[in-house]
Image 1: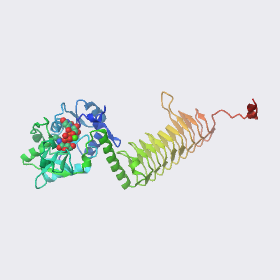
Image 2: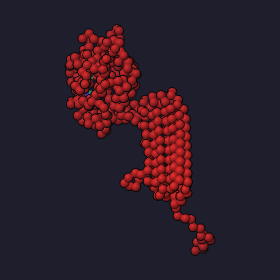
Image 3: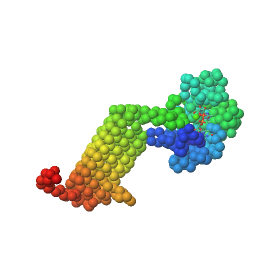
Image 4: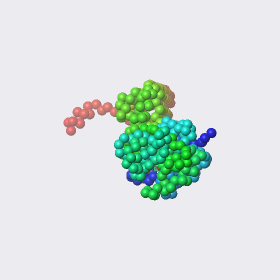
Amino acid sequence: MRELACIILAAGQGTRMHSSLPKVLHEVAGLSMLGHVLAAAKQLGAMQNIVVASPANAEALKQAVGDVTIAIQDQQLGTGHAVMAGSTTLNNKQADRLILYGDTPLLTLETLQKMVDAQKQHNAAVVVAGFRYVGPTAYGRIVCDAQGFGKKIVEYIDATEEERANNLCNGGLMLLAGDVADALLSKIQKNKRKHEYYLTDIVALATEMGRKTAVVECDEEEVLGVNNRLELSEAEALMQRRLRRQAMLAGVTMQDPGSTFLSYDTHFAPDVVLGPHVVFRPGVRVAGGVLIKAFCHLEGVEIAEGAVIGPFARLRPGTKVGENSHIGNFVELKNAHIGKGAKLNHLTYAGDAEIGAGANIGAGTITCNYDGVKKSKTVVGEGAFIGSNSSLVAPVTVGAGAFVGAGSVITNDVPPETLAVARGRQVNIAEWSKRFRKK
Ligand code: UD1
Ligand code: CA
């Protein structure tokens, strides 16, 4: 059995981001760029993931991503040097090495799988991923022999006019066979012009050794490297297009795909309908038959079959919305469990709350879950009715089937089937208005 290790290059300074956050930790569709790359590597079955960091960003990268080996590249002496730094931390020196960049969030599992397959098929020492680009561009060029195997890669600045006219560009991903990887890496010489160790030199070295370099072609989009925030926004747009497409082809209706923003992990059952301007942050699962109307924002939420959400609802982490529940306009839920068929239709905040099945929460009801020191829980029983504009001061329980009069401030538990009214009594003073106007 061959083993696969993944080495992800991320030692670049990312100065053009103008950010205190390392470049590869900037997010695309709710996940860091490095997270996207790691997810693909894991799906491919890599036994070890090595992130090559700089002394400056190593700590932040270690904090951000669990379950990886951090290798520190002391000085940035080029992509070949970075791979050598990463290789010193390999658990299995014979493992095949997949080289990825931490700033290419759009790479796909399919392309990586093709690279693994090409290596096996051709017993290739090296597999590179290329893409076709027509027009001027500064990418390295892959020079192939008559059979389509790579002979060498020339960097743009070192290339002749003829080599620059070749439109097969080097995407940067590379797979090195475990049996020759170290032998090849150790032969890379410092480039005379840039004083760097080019990883790309490895193709010519393999050719000299009489070993093959297979070439896999992919879309340019997949190897799009993000260097500044403009490119970050372009990567985001491409990722959103991809996620929307997947969701729609799997049975989600989007009235306005262009204003629907998904996260990398948004999960929909078939037959969900989304109005325009709905934003999904990470951790949302939506069951079938759910309707989410315009202008909703959801994060860390589970929504059961047939629920109707919005317009203008904000659902925050820890929230579960039960089957056929209605969450209406200007309702905010945080860590709230809403029972089957319950209705919170207008202007409500429910935080750290449990709302029983079939309960009706009147307009303007607020759970007062925070006393300035700690958060407390509000429980509303099944079928209870909370009159409009009530405050439920937690910790407090309103029993099943109980009623709360409108405008109440409920500070004590309400037993089941009981009416609670907690507000100033109304006083009517006859003829008062006339006397007032005379004065
Ligand atoms: C590289 C390829 C080029 C290819 C292009 C695709 C080489 C010599 N050239 O060029 O053929 O067309 O990618 O995008 O490999 N890094 C380190 N340590 C270093 C140097 C780089 O970790 O010492 C990391 C960077 O953070 C980056 C990645 O490696 O994520 C690529 O480095 P970069 O300098 O952008 O390579 P290119 O010059 O674009
Ligand atoms: Ca680059």
